[in-house]
Image 1 (cartoon, rainbow, N blue to C red):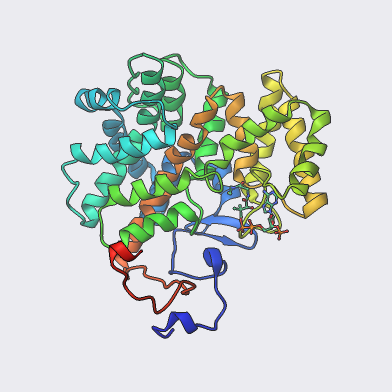
Image 2: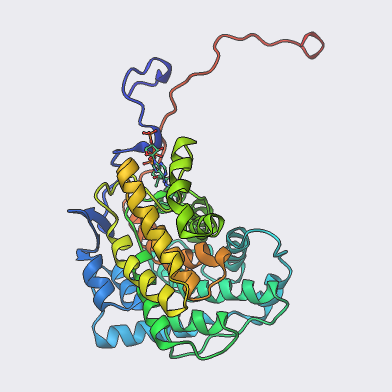
Length: 380
Ligand code: COA
């Protein structure tokens, strides 16, 4: 493209739709489903633990028995939060959205990391391990601190999913079935090709900035309601609708008003998001388990109505909302829960970007004024 962008005649790719910005072997949407390193999400969600998926994303291979045991032991060592760090966390005001708090907390974590200034791959692997191990401890610490309690520390030898439920539940043994389903949710959310937050990670990494900075950029991107923030918005929408009878009309009114129905639609999947199909089953099961099947029924009706009216289908955030609600996870922690999983993918994208880097630097087509002449202050 010429440097003369004001005269650029080509198509403007608003939102970069269809633009291929890099090569990647981390994950991709192939034949209508999501693949991590060559394995379909259906296969992984059926068989893998979250820890195995993290290993797979970072090492481009599934771990064998001893590699998995060593990886779990390394994560175990890093899950706990230092007393000094907790003290600092207690000083961050909690009256902001938890994603804003998480963004600050993760940024602060770099100050305790001896590898913070080392951008070698070995150091980035160590930092990724620490970030992934600590993310759920930090999210649960937020919830404890805002409720005036001391954060519960994680238990060694247990999974990230188990520990999240244990810490969030104030140190009570979590329900085994919920832990299993939550672990699968973490698997489903671990990566998703060049989504907005993965791209944000890669853009920051492409200036050869450090891993914490790249992850902080990603958290900021995930926070928005058009990306990870949609899962929280879905439950708020269901609560606002209130009853099954009102669901269809709500959708029609939203479409008439040109408003977005949260958790619906996707830039890439036009025949449905495979993760939504998997989460839908959990939503049906768990809303029944807690005796509130109306939330699944409403979701299902909204899903059908959106398809009939607009040909749009649910994305990952639509049914995960009622799954997390049924697990008694506070609504405003739904997006931080997304981050607990997606940290795995962000780190994998950062590794790939550093290994084959060229700084991201697109152009903007000029539509501003030209040829203005300076006016002195007293003449304006
Ligand atoms: N509700 C109502 N209409 C929607 C919609 C939704 N959730 N998603 C897309 N549309 C409509 C748009 O209004 C637009 O209609 P038009 O062509 O008649 O103007 C068309 O579908 C294309 O939408 P657009 O926003 O340009 O698609 P996109 O590829 O830029 O955005 C999303 C994709 C996911 C951001 C978008 O579908 C959305 O905002 N969904 C709701 C938020 C959400 O669930 N985000 C989580 C993503 S995983």
